[in-house]
Length: 435
Image (cartoon, rainbow, N blue to C red; front, side):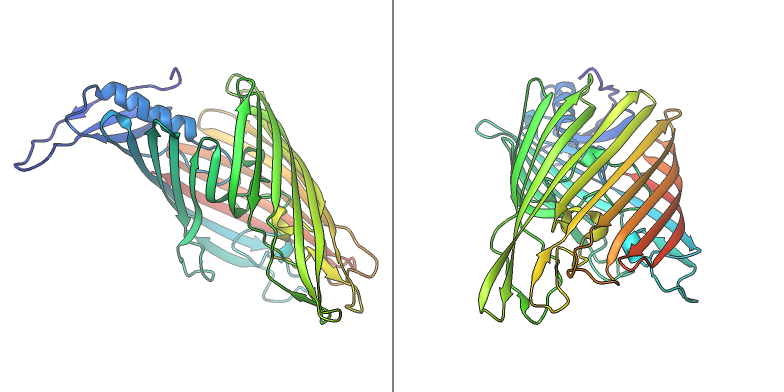
């Protein structure tokens, strides 16, 4: 609680006849972020209750890629048995592509066109679909301990420009277990740098999965581990002899992490994922099972109070859902030239970045990322993706603790198996306000 700064004001409201209670609104500053609390007048010790509710959200707050700030609004019941937070942010991004484009709202090297023409040299984009809403409820129970329910959504559920709401996460968590939809266990949330580009480095592996997960910490939170069963997402290339079919075995990601520092704010993590992908052999009238696997080393290191490093490296076979540039690419497996045999594809990627906090308001960062699919004789074609590169540099300035502006430059390149390659450049500007 030493990191929490309390500044309490009260604004009593006049009870109305028939009201069960009259609410009183309190203001509390949490690491320079104001949070409005709403309690009943029957609460015996409002200051203590605010401290307990604050600690609940402080302890369960997640940092890292595409995460939100702590909530602006919290409503708590008597004795903080139940509390509810509402929050999110509004984000507007303006982008301009030049000397080649990435044909996507996000800067994805896989989507760089390899045939230059009049329509893919430059483009202007404006996007607010990454704006976020979330609801988080915490119940302090005698049997299960602290129970967390979390739901969040953005507006990327439909075609580009439709602003259709999209469910991102929806999970129940208690006693180390998570049930529902969340970021895959194979993803190290704090191993990626902050970018205006929503997807970020192409070798990173931010993705969602429906899962059952167990996590635990030990040795005073220095050591932690997790294991999960997750709904598989298979993206392969089929042929007349090999047909798609429903999957039968979940993906199994695991990780082991060691953290250090006063706030455990530096760590290294080793992760693995194991997959079984089913196809139908139409010639033999039988099922075929392909084994996919991946390993990853990742982490973040606070070198000094003003310098932080980020990194991850991943290698595996048939793991396109766990490498951002390859998600949905059809490269989990490929048939040979005759289409009478199929094989999982080896792939790898890595990214490294650094962030420089020049002041409490101003930060600079930059980094490099690369993804590669290895060629297997007879099982890849000249027009298939071979390699993607992603380079970025940005600056963020916080106008207030909840409002930031940023500017970013991005360079990307794609190369096919045939050696044909093309590149793209993008400038991003963003304004974001958390609530």
